Amino acid sequence: MARASDTARAVTTTLHGAAQAVPTKLHGAAQAVRRAWEQPGRERDLAAQALKAAFAAWLSWAVVGWWLHAPMAFVAPWVAILLVESTVYQSVAHALQQLAAIAAGTVMATVLVLLMHNRIGAMGLVLPVVVLLSSWWRLGRQGIYTATGALFVLTDTHFGWAASAARIGEAAFGATVGIAVNALIRPPVYLRNARASLQEAARKTAELLEKPAGRLVDGQWDEDEAKAWHQQALHIQRLVEECRSAVGWSRESLWGNVRRRNLAPSSPAGDDEDALVVLEYAAVHTTELTRTLVEAAAEDRQSHWAGLPLIHGYADFLAQAAQVMRLSGQSGEGRDHDESLRQAAREMRSTVDGLHRQMLDSVPGEPEEASAYGALILQAQRLAWHLDASAREDSAHGPA
Image 1 (spheres, rainbow, N blue to C red):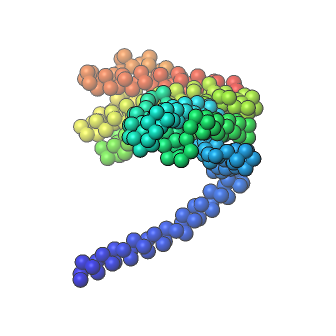
Image 2 (cartoon, helix red, strand yellow):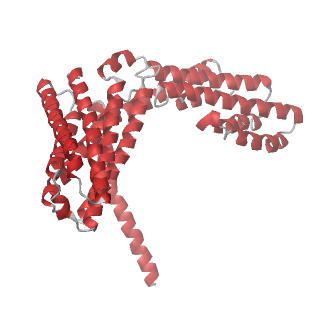
Image 3 (cartoon, rainbow, N blue to C red):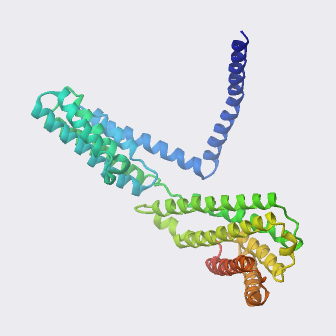
């Protein structure tokens, strides 16, 4: 009885929690709908793609099913809705793979059924082959449609070369409609996503660079705090990977895109690539810096590090690099912003050049510490060079 009572309470608690979560989920959905209606963004892009996919399916069915009365008319809208992809390039590439897969499965199944005059026997022979063929790397994720094409033949009471050719033709028509709709009606572009990802990563990197800048001088950091910084640095590395993916998506979304001429000049592809390189150097530097601080704290050497001759200059560099990162992430703010960015970059470069000149005479005598300290200064010099170059390019382009 006690166990049953506990189970009942657990079920009641779960149901109560689920009931409480429903209003939150509904509110989130309502907010997403409002954002899609009011401003450009991810929600509007998703809504547009959903409407385009539905239109492509409707148009395919209207021609093949309603007008032509094709025997397997559902194949056309099915293929069309699948090929309203995230980019125009993917629509074309996946259409070729999918048509090849459907044709291969259809032809193989038709040949065996006509030769054996036994669909059950043909199914036992052809399915292992087409399932194996579906894993062929050239077909990618569309390989599964080899089995689908074969099953359409094997489970249809009307089979023959004419029916198989009609089925492949219907798939080709659906693919054509899907590609045309995706390419001609508001083709997807992901420049906003890439830029937002880069700006978020730049902001978080700036915040992390600022945190140890003041603590290095007074030596007031502990191992837990240094470990938290290191975890944030590792998170920034993951953000950089997400940025790389977003930049790749934005580049691919311009291939074969009729909107490219209007969109590309306002956001040169090289700008995002350059920003990504800077973020990669910043991620490496923050990771090495925080790892060094964790090791120093573990050995209780904070006061020793605070007494190093170049530590004040290095702390200044971190604060200046943070400012440059922050300003670089705020594009299109006008001439005052550009001048502030150039000035911050010049000050940072001057600081790191001074550190480099003094490094040989000032590094500690212990080999391991000298190596760690020298590596940080060398990485600082590389990061400063890329930040300075990026700042000059941003200023040269002017407001977006």
